Image (tube, rainbow, N blue to C red; front, side, top):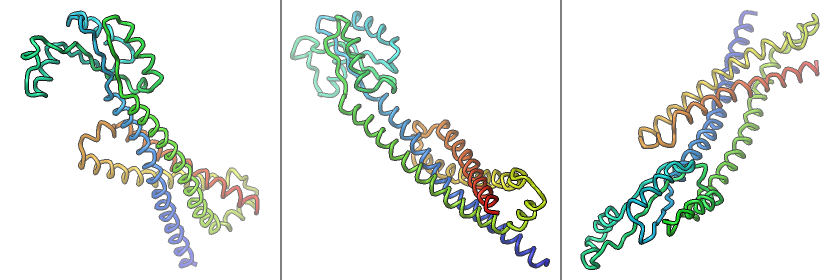
Length: 285
């Protein structure tokens, strides 16, 4: 009798360990999907905010007039950063780039004032850019507004495709996790079928019978989630050690949301699987 009880406890222990490990593996994959999706979104914002809208002023515009226009543009809600380049700076930069001073043989500074504007990520799309370009051209001192339309369209298109792929993968992994966890849970319930049968015979309600299973499921889900979070944190640290600049994309918000998503997924998936399995068994009993 004692040996049978010991074997039962050992078997239960192996089932719990198997459930935690299998759940952790699935949660790691789910966490990677969330992590990659959030990091990709940050990367997209980073790229968008580093795309430049160039504002060229007319030939007869003075540095002061151009600077006044730039100060007005600086306070527009769609501007993330604005850099003003006056005639003298433009001449200096081109002289360094060309290796010769164009004004020496032209007898004048051929360059006009300009401004380079980095937009907020939410405004870096074709529709918004067309409106923004029209607003900038309303200044009579402005001669031309240029931006990399094709690149912006490509960034937005690639982000939409990536998010769709991430969503499909997340749904597939969720389905797989339900299947794996549900099968493991059913084995555990089958081993305890006699205890469930006795509780049913003495008139215990379904909610009373489900309660200990659900408590165990929450605990197992938390343990599996913590294991997954630790593995993901180690992976994130390895990325940081390899490329420290990745912190501009992998922020603490990304890590926090990923950890919260894994924690919730672990508890919710385990609880739902146990609830469904126990209820299904009780209906058959």
